[in-house]
Image (tube, rainbow, N blue to C red; front, side, top):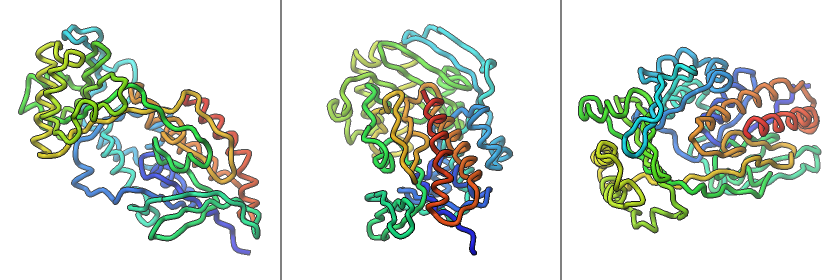
Length: 379
């Protein structure tokens, strides 16, 4: 009798989905990864992006288990874990050199590139949009079957589906009616490339790691990154979920948005000149690098703390789909990779079964335990 092999799908080709696909592959378990976006080009992946600090028990362990440790060490670069916190007048409130923890940082796109290079290309289905997903019991086999409607690409059915599809997860709808809510914060993102040669004074202000300037409920945060870059985030506290529209910033470039950021007394109008200069230069450089492009302004969302769902056969969630949180603690990607590590271990430990129904029965208690542990870690 042939060995039964479960049909497994991972929805979402971010770090958690890619890591899970690789970990399962290493254990001889095939999974198909569905990603809405087309495959990124090498040029796109090489661009500066946000920095992620990986933690020993989660992200760094995932790098080792995925066989990516050597590549990760190369990709980490020469930026440091130092942290400087100042107020809006430029007065230093706290500084350290990262001596209290070892959490090496990697650019998000560099992490994605590492994983894409490792995961077998034939298991990733890019440019696939799942329009609807439904769960039904197969009358002939007795197993739960999850079916995707892929529009013009047809349908696909699976015995087990993992929602790694982020904040607005389509898979989460199978398990929970809860939707993310607006956090009250907006981020304007801009990048200065080749900062040390173009703007040495800004390079010195930003430092070799992370700078965080706080005042009036707003913030300017910077991180060093690839291509000698400074990645700047202007965090705006506002009750208006659609702030860009309300402030008439939709369609404007970062250089144009700068005028509002620096001219509004509720924002950065009264901040120290050096911090205003940092913000202005970042907005101008962003527009020079991407002429005519709309400024990157995003409202930030989160799931309620303690969000949980009633377990259902054949489906689970990992990462932001399960426990979306704000980025300030640096836990999001680490928890997502930890979820993928634990889930890969669970799936690899399921004994051989005669068919899908028997496999799901064997998996069931393991999945209940996995979900309880995952949700407890994310609180």
